[in-house]
Amino acid sequence: MGPSSVRRFLDRQEAGRELGARLARFAADPGLVILALPRGGAPVAAEVARALGRPFDLLLVRKLGIPGMEETAMGAIAGDGTVVMNDELLAELRLSDAAVDAVIRRETRELARRDTLYRGGRPQAEVTDRTILVIDDGIATGATMLAAVRLLRQRRAARIVVAAPVAPPDTVARLADEADEVVVISTPAPFSAVGCWYEDFSQTTDEEVGRLLDAAG
Image (cartoon, rainbow, N blue to C red; front, side, top):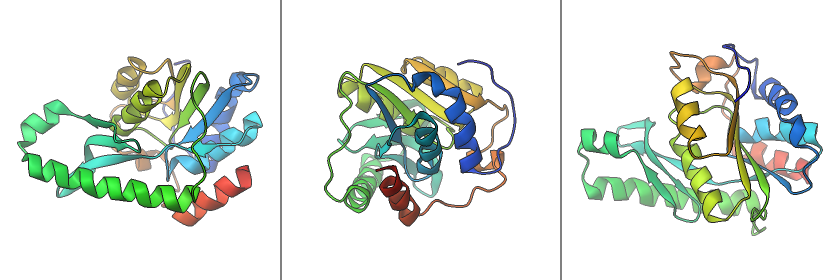
């Protein structure tokens, strides 16, 4: 994971510039692909892409929130239908299959909406046999990022590097078991929430994501 510290970032752009410096060693890889988890990961990935002289694309993955407590993830789903669930949490919650299925259906519709909105029919970046940097603005439970890693494994990526400005140590360890490398700048404990580690954590809009993609070519 490399050296880390506990700190706050001004905004996603500052965090992305610092992350880009940490990832500069990948710039020489001719097969490098930079993928962002939208929406918050897009401004961070845009700065990384600028630092490495590459475009970036999106990897569409959605958190599956607990009904009534949507900010808490019980799992995540990727664009191809890959589902990752927190089985221990599900056992504690004792949710019905119908309740879980309803959340999965809702987030599947949202993934389809975003794919149409952001990509407009453009194909996903090729990942087979490539080195992939998959980037978010921060990682809390890791459920969404774990779904992303498993999706990339299924698509036969050669090397998967998870990168984010901030994540708790236990999540970093969990992701390190499945990704080839995890690069995180700040690993605070206790963690609370990603937004606590930014001065400005205003919501990234669909329009901003679209603009960043267009600017990246």
